[in-house]
Image (cartoon, rainbow, N blue to C red; front, side, top):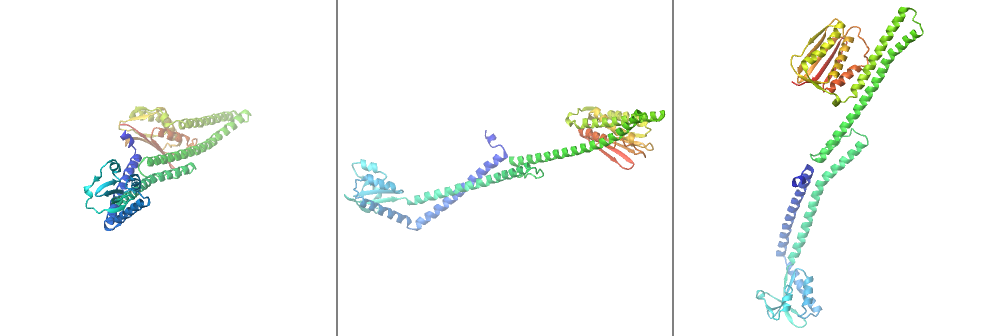
Length: 438
């Protein structure tokens, strides 16, 4: 129960602030109390203040008796006056016998005999004339306690004010920070997401501020990512529209020539039919790539099923599947396989798509005079696959949108790897990094 009550940094800070404020206020109270009491006692000892207060009280008592023509038996009136006069005790003596005491009025009134008080013998008494007799008065005064009590009340009040001020200081630090967070959140609500949230301290409030800041950054990143994706898709649609329109226009033209029999000779007819087939296949290739692109980009990383494979034979198999295509295009190649055994988690269908795109680019752009270099190695728990070829003098330009490489990059990122493609005037190279297990 206690552990749950004191859990949390903010709660602990508030408890420590309370204890610190209490300790400081108690110290101030004791310091003020002792200091004020010493000053008061020195003043009382060195002056006739208390004596003057006592003489004034005696004079007021004698005046009260005289003005009201009190008799010695009027104990009720005497007690009433003594009750109004705090810090005063009245003793009345007749012939050295105690006849009245404001402290023992009931005992004195109820006793048939006068009480002898030997302690007061030798103390100077003040004569007082009652209506029926004369008595002697001894008045015991405690006026110093009156001022000591006042001092105690004042020091207690000051120490309590000090306690409240210290607590308000600590609380104000937190409430002002809450006010800062409130204002900054309102700024974020206004749409100014670049405004950073102030993180101060190491308690729950600072943790909350840090979480809001991270949420702000994440939201900004998501918005930026959506903007980039929207722009990329817009550019892609524009490029694909251009690339589709070009062969489609040619295809419609060839078909019109055939439909209206404007081909002239049988050879021209066969040529137009052949060209129409080529443009139709070109349109099919572009549409397949577009479908593939949206299929991959609408698949989240967690939705891609990965299987564990023995890496060396798998990579060799994927490379061998592509080498036949290079041979059919009379493209030379050099393959340097990986010599280190490893395990790799991949989606085989998606990875085949990557290799198909990469080697399709090679067959389009590579020249036949120099070999394609394919190297595979393991470094820093990652598989590195380098593919480099020299670009031929008349490379094909069908895949001008780069949609195939965008698809490959997305697939590699889904495997927590990276794909870097560089192209110069005469060199085309691709480098793949994928995480592996020993």
